[in-house]
Length: 257
Image 1 (tube, rainbow, N blue to C red):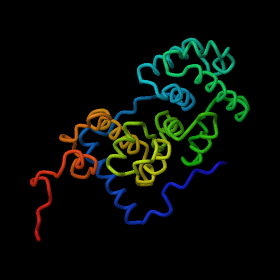
Image 2 (cartoon, rainbow, N blue to C red):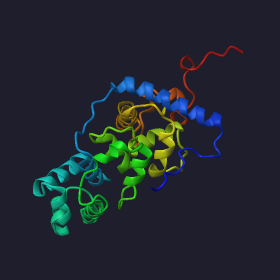
Image 3 (cartoon, helix red, strand yellow):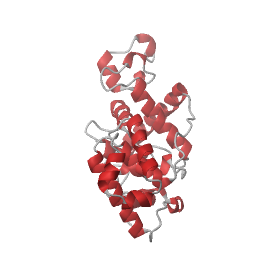
C-alpha cells in the first residue's frame, strides 16, 4: 500500500500551524453562515461512477462534463462496455469535455487496471471499509488519478467519506487568506488544507467546508477583481487588506494603549 505524504510540513512551528488552523475554522464558520450550510450533496453516484465523472470534469465546465457523462452512459450502459469499446467511440461520446482524446484512453486504462486488481469486479464499494488515507492512496495508484479525484470519489459518491477535494476556487481563497503559501499548487494544497480540519469531522462537515470556500471563490473572491470591499473575511485577509489599504477605524480593534 503506497503511503501518503506527510500532511503538515515538519519544520512548521506549532504556533504557526495553530494560527492557520484557527483562521481556517473562522473562515469555515463565517462562510457557512453566509452561504447557508449545511449544503445538500449534489451527487448520488456510486464510487466508480463518481471516479469516472471526476476524470471527465477535469478542467471542464460543469455543464459540459455532465453532458459528456450523460452521453457516455447513454451509449455504453455499463463500465465493462466502456472498457471494451473502441477508444474512438469512447472519445466521440465524451466530446463535450476538454481533451477527450486524452481522457478516453485514460478512462479505459483505469477500467482495465481495476478489472485486473479486482478479479473482474468493477466495483469500488470496498473503499468504505478502508481508512480514508489508505483509500485515497489506493485510488491514486490508478492512471491519472491525483488527490482531487481521489477525494471527490470518496466524498461526493454514496460512500460519503470525509476526504476534502480542493478545486481552483477553493485554492484561490485559501491562498489569499494565507492558509497556504503563494507558491503552493492545487495538488500540493490538498494535504496541507485537509490537515487544518478537525480529525473528527464527518463527511457533511468536510463537504460544507469545501463548498463554502468554493462558493466564495465563485461569488466574491474572483480570479480577476475580487470583491474585497464586501468580503466577510476582509478583516482577516492579508490579500484584501493589501488591495484596499488600511481598514476603516470602525472595523479595527480599539487602541487601549
